[in-house]
Length: 73
Image 1 (cartoon, helix red, strand yellow):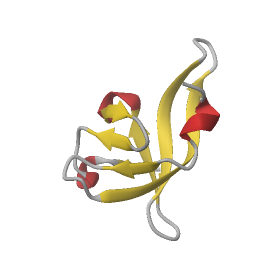
Image 2 (tube, helix red, strand yellow):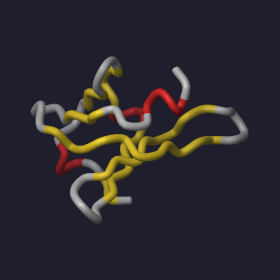
Image 3 (cartoon, helix red, strand yellow):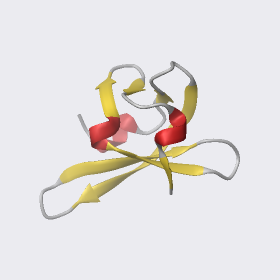
Image 4 (cartoon, one colour):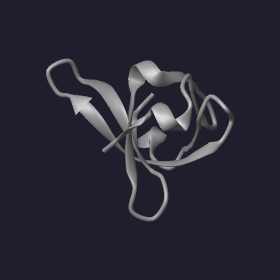
């Protein structure tokens, strides 16, 4: 999956609550891999979601953890 395919996807936490849309990705340029997703949660709040916290990606991004366990960007 390409990084641009992730932008705009809705993110749901482990409790099926909407966290927000993916706004950006963090890359490891040495390995050319995505390390985290940046999600806009509300008007000003941004969250960093590590790849290890993602359960699956389809039409939406599903997380393994509840929203309160995600760190703020």
